[in-house]
Image (tube, rainbow, N blue to C red):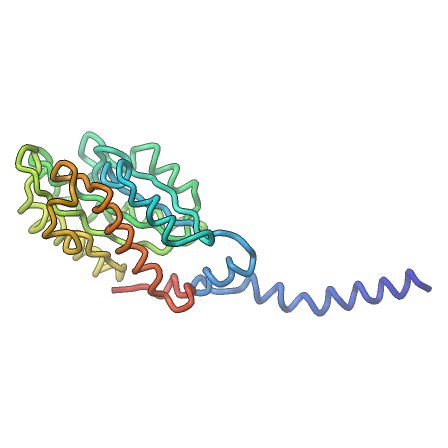
Length: 236
């Protein structure tokens, strides 16, 4: 009799719990953050970029700002480009595969500085198409991550093969146009530190203060979602 009673109780619990289970796993991507908090798992943020990401402290600062509910990964690849015809396309680097394997919920892409190299200007006709391929690769992941496009920081160095004006007038304009066409959120890193050469170690790479500002800009964008639950409703 006791066994029969326990069986009845167990069946009742399963029946009552079933609708909750269905609702939990049918949550739309716009409720991703909320559902992940319910499940007790972290929201994964992949920081994609070149040496400005790899060698800076911005991903670490971003982790500190976002807190324990998030896991921030640094997938910067020194010297890499958006352009697929360069000597080091980001999509050909192991960091790209690692970023995909991270199965991120949010991807912050900050690339384009190396595409500004004067020796690569001739290849930049395909810049937007190549950038779109990179974005699409992340969007096809099972985690269907939200893509955030961060503009490259300004260039204050005249001792490199980089052109400050070309970055502003060509690379960033192409980046913004693509983001607008794809209805992706942009983070204006360039303007945020555009008047502050003191925030850079060498005129190109941000120092700790510059890294902190980049992290704050990214954090403010992520934190702007109501209750951290509208990851899929982001748009420019």
